[in-house]
Length: 153
Image 1 (cartoon, rainbow, N blue to C red):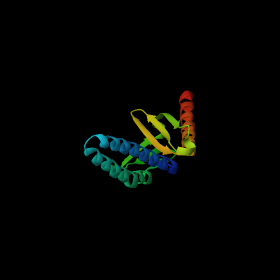
Image 2: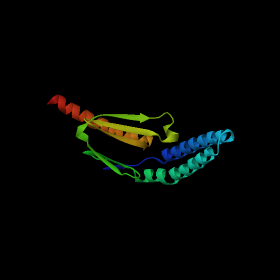
Image 3: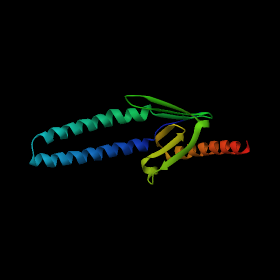
Image 4: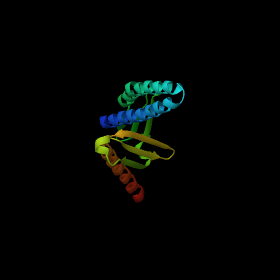
């Protein structure tokens, strides 16, 4: 059984995205506060507090609690922050998979693997580029073995 977890580069990318988004929202609220009422100052304060909560609690918890396992028989995906979710998928039921490797994945770590079966889907988020290639090649070999066994039967 091989264990995988989200990459640290993805966590840093999420941090930067949240900071840039909150700065843009605070700038817009500050600009509106010059012309309108004081409510925009409170909205800006709320955005700053929410940003700190997300950056200090939610993102680190998500990245520390998320685990993916691939064994000879099954795929296990454990994710969540406040609501913990555990998904199982037998490799014999896998029908297709999609590996999403972003252009700047070496710098961002924003790679995904979407595994489909009849009636279910497992999404493995924020994997490193090497992990996506390793898992997808293993799934490819498994699917090709099954299709070759089905053709001979």
